[in-house]
Image 1 (cartoon, rainbow, N blue to C red):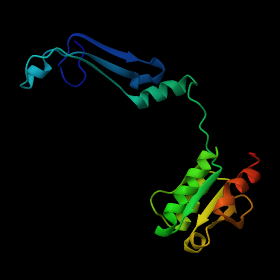
Image 2: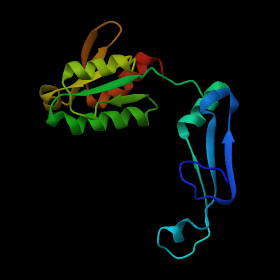
Image 3: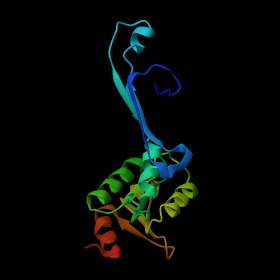
Image 4: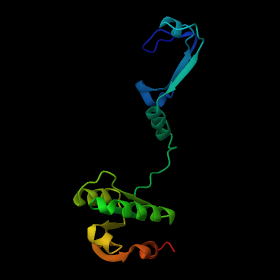
Length: 169
């Protein structure tokens, strides 16, 4: 019997290990536990089960160089200032993604400073900033994060302008 915290396995037990992980090498384990349900008051129910530790699987894949490289840089980060800007910001985000741009936004309603920090962390090339005035004018401030330059661009011209600036025609 293999004991993994509880001594409930019967007949067959297994553990899958990946030795290069060292002392924490177990990636998955399981077996038969025919008497477990009966032991806790249920009807006799033969059973088999297993569990996999996703973190361990990821570590094993990483050790073998099998994880894809993470794409860090975003094309666009949408900054929504205030409740009135939320719906237009979501529409712009969706339009960017449909156009094949890597786009993201803050979903927690943080301050502009916090959202711009998040844009920097996402290595966004551009930020689209929407506040009350921009929403009233159906436009957004398009900020080039590298040059710290910004310009007002109407919502209906935004994707075209972004693609032009990103060279993604």
